Image 1 (cartoon, one colour):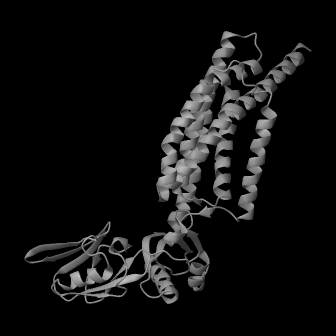
Image 2 (tube, one colour; image 1 turned 120 degrees about the horizontal axis):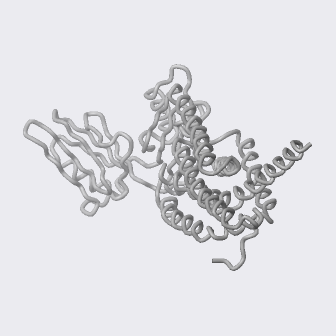
Image 3 (cartoon, helix red, strand yellow; image 1 turned 180 degrees about the vertical axis):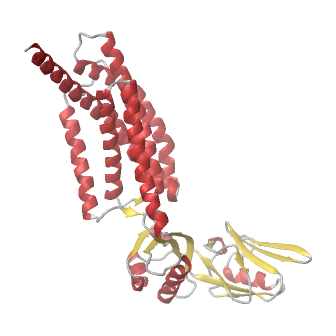
Length: 401
């Protein structure tokens, strides 16, 4: 417990000035960047995660049974299903360290023909992409292997330039050679035609079979529009219900103060998403709604302490009571923020995809929520309460006349 109360009211102008400056920066980045970096959820079209990986092995099957190849870790599994049952063979990297060794081993299986395109590639670098497990046939199935390279975003843009407005992002470390590609829908486009157009363009630029599709998502225009309206409605309804709840539990000044603080949190997080060009997707909406709940919980704890202190000591000024209440709640606020961040930071560092972005957004949201609930919401409550008190005095004077 601090010996002196935190002078929240004394420094309220500085707290709000900092918040407004940061909000202006966020709005500026949104204008300069031409909007959010919309994910495929909100921007209809095709989104693919691709990786530059050389083809090291070509496999065909001439039998009449069903033959499939699957990759798990650094092991290749060949499974043949026929009238006599299922035959499964596992080729581990420890036994077959190179693609040449792997080709030799596959050729020993009846009706399987394997050709090493690049025999020096390491089996432990086998890459399982979109379309695996792969069904073998007389048409060659190529296996790709991870390899470091110096392909840049510009190289991908040049390769896909003929397809129109294409957005490209690097995924992970540059050495991984992994990229996120997004294309908008044109007239008469379907998922299959768009995927085929991307494949042909990449094959023409980087060589056939040297690009692996790790993930492919397609969102139609109607679904995208419906998702946008539903997401906006969800946030508005959440804000309205919060306003009613706090108004009922406390009083109007508390409700408005909480709502303004929550709007601040949402706008600040949107500003960060715009500034750092994070992808705006349905995961972002989930993070926003979660942060609203987290920040509201902090604010209610502080407001409850303010109400309690005001009822216990009616002679003290509201500014003193607010400073005292924020100080008394500080240890609880810090512990909540630290323990939540302790769970989120590992996800932000080590996770990938939507989980990583959710954790990153939550991390920023917790910081903004802690700031608003301890500094902005109490100072807004102070201003509104003073305005209400002044209005009541004027009303009484008018009535006395």
